[in-house]
Image (cartoon, rainbow, N blue to C red; front, side, top):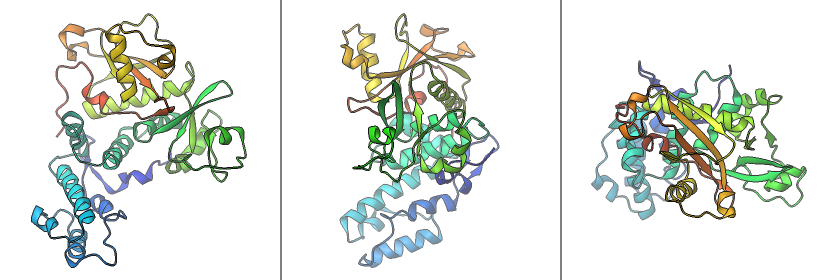
Length: 335
């Protein structure tokens, strides 16, 4: 098996005996190397000194007064956010523990970019040893928005950021459909080309077939199983379904904001028009291998997971819902 997602920074982290990720100085310095954190040429002496001090010791305490002394207001805000995030990481034994607390209690002012980066590296840890590259490509949905389109009768998801450019003269029908720059090379991952994923995993340039009944959703189901098992320590099975009919939503989890809204409407017996229902792109049935961990009122019942896209045909998955939304009595204590 080859390495993947080097951009997550997982090589810079240590691991505890239980498999959780331990923060290192090298990992913290990644944030100091971000463009918005590097003091510009006209930065004040306070900001330049703070940056240099943290590069030497990224764990050194930084007070509110230290940041308040920075002259530029935008720089002050950047430093407030970064130091608050750093301090949150340092309060926990593992990155997994830091993430779970954010999921349960809210991210507050922590930038979504930082939260997605946490998901990226934790998921890289959870998926270590996976040999099917299609599972890894499906897992990209946890931390990168996807743009969805119908292409030759199939529902195709491609990385929103990768295809964000506009091209006046696309070179293939798929490029034309998705608005991909001509220089981009987008392939739909399948059995024949999956091996090429390993060397290009950090480019996020392979599309995923999310047509009901095909392997894309099976791959996503496997990724979600590993995520729940790693972060919560709970063993589950997840099965991709092909239709919403004859499903008793005794308990459901929306995997994104739009899916949660649609699930709430179904729960309350509200009428949902065909347009809204067409935005449901995936349905999964989750079962606990040990039902005793479940809440008494739904013990033994399956949990349904719903995935939807926005009216603009974008999927913005919220993996934190798999941490906070399951009907379990005792969540794993992650420090």
